[in-house]
Image (cartoon, rainbow, N blue to C red):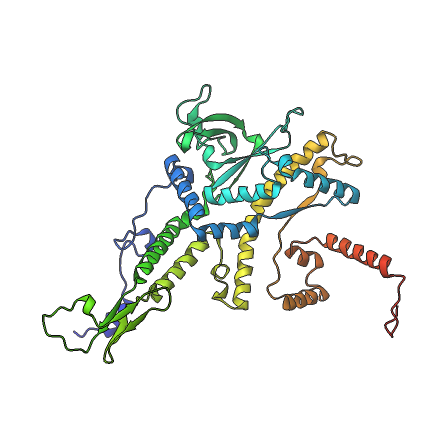
Length: 467
């Protein structure tokens, strides 16, 4: 009986398998790494000893590896710098509030340690969030008008919020996970703050504080997550590999630079006869100037050269560095300015701006909570008087992120001007991208025009140039 060729077509063969409609990704394979079959929270996946190791690795790279430290600084440049603008609509009130914020932003008025102004305080807080996973800001003296630290801030680095060694009188440590006690719904109720032991060994209890006096600033990727986890975790091994590979490549390159050469001589030397160095016909000068070899007319010399690092190694390191920078979404063109052209650089910047805008929201939220608390104290203490029936919660304000310079000023100014003319954008939006406030620019222009009119208004310039 003849066999139909159609039945031999593998594309039409029906395989009757119990896994026919299953997900391939759910099937194990010896070609892939076995993934743990335990579903657990992030806090359980990173217990205390592993969290400590991750923080140690992150801090070591920040301290010793220039690429990781640079990536962190670029992140901070785009995410952690803001200027304050009061938006009550009352000019005198706005000016008064902005003066108070400038006063509070000074180191001795903002930081309980008196070292960091608000700008640097926020930059350091964001750096700790990215490196350690989270940081905590303690609001001081809010309930006690006589407290000398009233209205100041204290930063608590993430490794100090934890369950201490040993027991604490009156505190059930089983209620705390990673130094945080939460309600059944997951809301933080209190924090354990520890002191580092001598030389960084061990942690002892400092105090237990209520969550209403603490603001947590961390990196979160899941709802069931109490403590933040650094985005650098995804690239720690890659950064470590790059760090070590560069060290090994440099060591090999140094070895390859050791002077070496081979002289091919055409002179006839009897077999088995070894000439002494003193009787050699070659003179070699390796002094401070250009070195020289005096050889016979038929001799030649080959210098030993090692093409190190190899092109393949450089390409691999470039790709690996690209992957490591993606941990904080930084495009490679930021690292290597010659990597792409203007269009490529602009496209990379626009995509990074989208990523940075989301990260800025976290910093703005922290600033909003800090300002709302501080302005409430000013109103309560009578330092700031609000008009009419206005309350502190009625105040409006804005934290404007630092702007970016134009990549191509001539092109972009023309494009912005055309967008305004066609009513596709506003001056406020365009200036905000530059980190400027439209009202401030208008006030400065008006002040300049008034000054010019005052100084030069009475002077006239004739066609002949006489004044």
